[in-house]
Image (cartoon, rainbow, N blue to C red; front, side, top):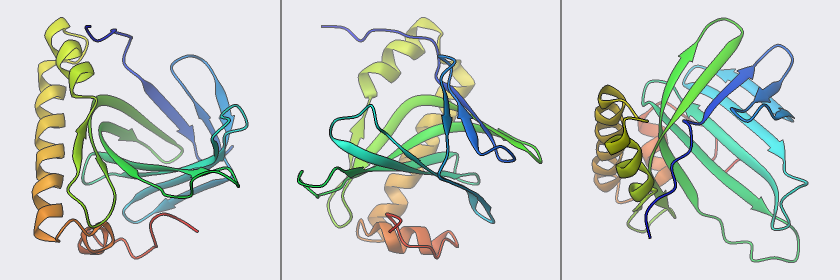
Length: 172
């Protein structure tokens, strides 16, 4: 079964109104929206998701990566994994625009990460949906993160600290 191609996923965050607009046109209010020295910290509730209460995302500007996780609803399995996804980030004083490159790493701190969405990435690259320059960026960003995580023994907190991020992940 082949990957189903969809247009690139582009999210725009308005830091003034604390709203995120998706490619689909959906607008989501953000419960947390902070510009940090390392990037952008976002959190929002997910009432439409029967398993997740909320989601937290960090746009790591220098790395070209989005780090995300979900908070399970009470009564559900409370184990949490994180996903590092390659993104192209464009920003100005008010807006942060991230374009998903469809390639990432799924990880639980302390264990070896696994590549995620690689079939979607390959199909999007082959079709031209992801431009060659963006595909190169995605491969470099994800492989660099994997190598750095390995150097930190797959400890996500240590990897973040080496990037100057002192806030706890996942956010409380």
